[in-house]
Amino acid sequence: MPGILGGNVDEVGVNAVAEPMRHEQWYEFDRVQTGRFELGVVHHGDRDPASDLFWEGDDAAGVLHGVVTDAPVEEGSPERLFRRLLDEPAETLSAMDGLFSVACADEETFVLATDKNGSRPCYYAREGDMRFSSELKSLVPVLESPSVDLRALSDLLTFGYVLGSTTLLTEVAELRPAHVLTVSDGDRSIEQYWEPGFELTPVANYSDQVDRAYSRSVDSVVDTIDTRTGLWLSGGLDSRILAGKLTDADHPFRAMTYGPTDSDEFDAAEQVTATLGVDHDQITLGPPSAFAAHLDRAIGLTDGMISWTYLLNFVHILNELADVVDVTLEAAPQDTYMGHDLSDADARKLESESVADRLFQRYGKLDPDQSRMLLNDSIDDPLAPLRDEADVTSAETPENVYRSVVWNVLAYSHFRSSGVMRSQVGTRVPAVSSDFLETAAKRPAEYNQRSVPFTDGAVPMATTRIKFDLVRQMDESMAQIPYQLSGLPASYPQWAHTIGMGLRESLKRVQTGQPGWTAVIGHWYRTDPALNSRLNELLDAASERPEFNAAAIRALQQEHLSGQENNIDAIAAITTSESWRQQYLD
Image (tube, rainbow, N blue to C red; front, side, top):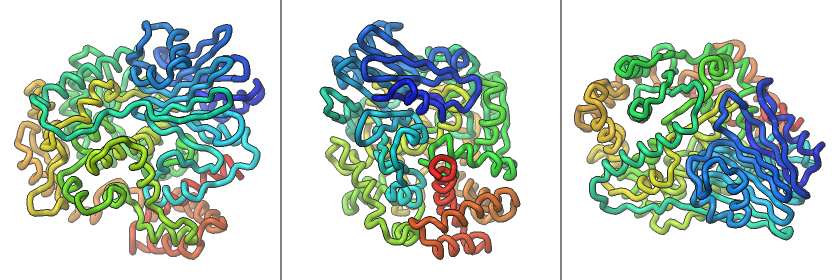
């Protein structure tokens, strides 16, 4: 996967770190050095020419993976950017926008940083000489005796991904979003250089402010794309809003929609593309045999740091995507910034519940007691990572601490899963500008996700107010296209969409018993010989590991295969870690 790498290593060492990242024959690798530090960047070359930077001067050097959309230096001046980062790391990064990880060094100072979203993973060795990489597996060759971190295994089971600075390797940490690591005179320091200023407060004409800030952010991202562009278009509102903004910016794009064979995503997306007059590819997930054939590769590309149940469309991405587009845009993470980071039910329950307990209600995949049992009771508190994340933020109220963690979790979930796609093409998201992020952080409480009255938060209203407002500010024909979850035109009132969404969800449950992606892949595991065989092999191997409780794994497996329970989340967590260990540690 493209990314940055290097540290206090010689030429042989930097090449050893780079080798596991060279997944495709078209990748290009550029190396720079200064004094004690060797730095490198693996990139897509002419397929995404606006992405990735490298620079070497007489006494300093730097590499950057991704794109910068705004910076406090003259555009096209990498030397000035890297030198300013070395002189004033936190101040410079606070004034930078984009999707990137960056490293630079001179004779005295080394700087490593992530962007404000944490869109590009960045790993570093905890002890000894500085060694870093965009891929966890790349650091294995330069570690003496790498070992598996039990906390990471617990996170995979409990949440489906590893949280915070923890990684699958005890000796390696991940740099959190909006953080900078500095080495000066042999001393390391890590600091958070930016927060968006979370606040729930009245704001006049809030929808108009969001619309303007979002448009400017989209324009800044579009300016970094010079090649064939693909947009992941669902039947929902986020990608529809983005499609409209791309059209407003006169940026050509190809729309792509994926789902199971009977997905209702396709119809609404087709109406959007017909209205905008753009090409549209409809992609069916699977088949399960192909899913099985590419499973280990997808796990490797995401470093085993996120369960493969989050990697929905990797068969198409790994086989066909690079043939039709060079850069993809997706709106999927932006719903967090548009009211989904806090519901009215969350705000109410935070008056009596801890932030960590409330976050577990949002993100928990497996009961903590089950996680402990599967790991032979080696982890005392599976929810400790949520408390650690809550301690990082400077936000003061429970609601805003909660929102801060939810924003950071995007780096550990959505952006981490994008590694599969980033291995094939350049990737972008629209929510990059400080202006937009700060506008989203400071909003009126009435724009939080609402729930149906008298349901104690159990029944959410159809999406959020701000998204309906933004769609209705678009061309009227776009507002008349049905919203996939409700089947009603987006121009209809929110309460009508809520009723429509409930009716459609009830119908799905009657027809399939359990709607959603986990039901599909759970069924594939029971019925497809190839997927069944590969997952059983991985479960057999995991059962032999001292960290796992073999009897508990067998019980999960048998419950699932007999149809008693759908345990695919736990099975996926176990097989994700086992696949990665077999590929890169054993």
